[in-house]
Structure formats: C-alpha cells, structure tokens
Image (cartoon, rainbow, N blue to C red; front, side, top):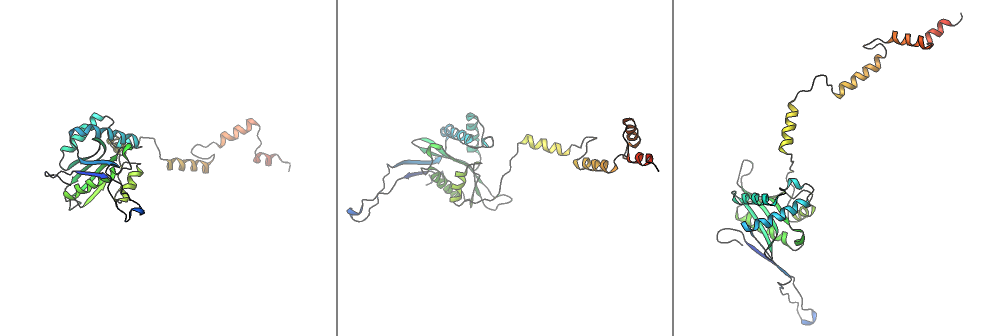
Length: 255
C-alpha cells in the first residue's frame, strides 16, 4: 500500500493453509500467521543504511565480478546509499524480518528522454541475504517495486542482475523479465590507455607479421642470390672443406 505522503509501504505475511481432514466434513482453510513471520518492505531511512551496506558487501563477495558491484568499504557504501536517497527519482527499498534488513532494492525512476517517451523504473540491484532466501522476501521486494513503478507512471521496469547470479536471473525470468540489451564495462583508466594507444604511431623499424612472412618467403625463393650474393663464398667454403660439387665431378670424369 502507499502512505499518505506517497511512499510505498508494504507488509507481507506468509502463511500456509491447513485442512481439517475428511472426517471433519468439507475442507476448511485457515490462515496461520505464525508459520512464517511477516516481512515488511518499505522505503529505507538513514538508520537502515548500515544494515543494507552489510548486505551489499555480502553480494559483492558472492559475485565473481564483485569489484563491478560496489565498493568494499561499508562506510563508503553508506555514503553512496545516502546520495541515492537524495537524487531525484532515487529509491532504496528494504525488506525487514524481525526488524533486521534481509534484502533490498536499489532503483531510480527515469523521466522521459531522447529514446523513451514515458517514464521507466530502473532497478540497479535486487538482493536477498543468504539466510533469508526461499521465504518470499524476493517476491515481496518485487511486489513493492511494481507498486513503486505504477505509482510513478513507469510503463516498464528494467533490471540488471548481479553478474553470475543465475538464481536472480531465473527469478526475474519467472516474473516476466526478458533480455533487452547487454552491458559492457571497462575501467576509465583502461579506456583512456587503449584510446591513447590507438593514436600512437608505430615505432620506426617495426614491421607487421605479414611483412615478416613476406620477407621470409622472398629469402627462400632467392636462395643464395638474394640481396647478398653468397655463391662465391659457398664455392670457396666447399673448396677448402674438400666438398666435391656435381659440376666438379663432371669436369674430372675421364673422356
């Protein structure tokens, strides 16, 4: 549901229906709220950010490309999350179980721009702590995310799963998320270095692999009469070594 100030607040309880059995007549289903305690999903406040930063660090350790996800310093993460909360359209949703953060969604509402005529919701991260999985926390987070998108007039929800997280990818696919485009990433320093290398002319005296192969082929075809004529040197070497060439053999044969 939404609060009076427009903030999204949702409390999700999970219970399992039970049956009284055939002997008791018709099947009666009741709600047992004690089976699974409630998971509350609401917009994060300042006091929630340290707990969310801990979850971000956990997500970083799980991913093979953790350096691309977030900073390793939790104090720095808290500052980053604080900035997101102050940005226009920035949203941090937190899932609480017994008052403890167990999952979060980082999202931004994007206004219409050059390539889109309508607002959209961009989910930068969705994560559920390892000890709170398979309890409906992810479903509760995405339900609150969908409500946030609807209240913001966003016609589409975009999400970028954590690299290597197949579970999240399957979860999103089950909810209807489909591939749209792929992201490629490079550090700024590497990009600048590669761009500078492309503009640097080749050093003098360097040749490409094709030039080297061509030179070797020419050397094989020219044999001894190539750029440096070695025929006289070879003849003198054979004479001193006592090597009899076919020409010398023909000259010494008796007539």
